[in-house]
Image (cartoon, helix red, strand yellow):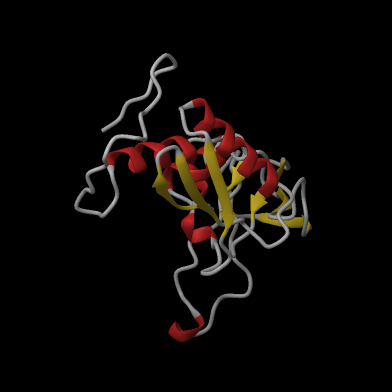
Length: 186
């Protein structure tokens, strides 16, 4: 596996050897680097932890294509995410980076990793509950219990459907009376 350092960038001109997963060690390293970029609106989680990184392909020497799925169509942070991915890959010796938006299949909150959910809660944002049941499995509950990230109570109330970003709602805990963001389930 390529382990780039600030003084030694990966050499994409070497003939890559695919792994069992069909990706090369260089592609895996570059995907790890691109996925480590913090989300511009939720900087406590990386793009990989948020689950918006869809893939990366080495197209040729020094040429990479990255697939990125926004949390919702029209996400204002998408351009910033793409620019940050391009920068981190340029910094690691890849001169030509193309970031493409992929809308299908759509992103859902189920894509957030366990580590991402932990970091959201640790930062005072109630993480989304796993979707679990689908329409094919039967009725989906209309009201979901949202646990307060401060005290753990499920006695919370919706203050606004939108908070600092469109993907979050503003809630308040009835037990500790603290307001908090809730990352909406999609």
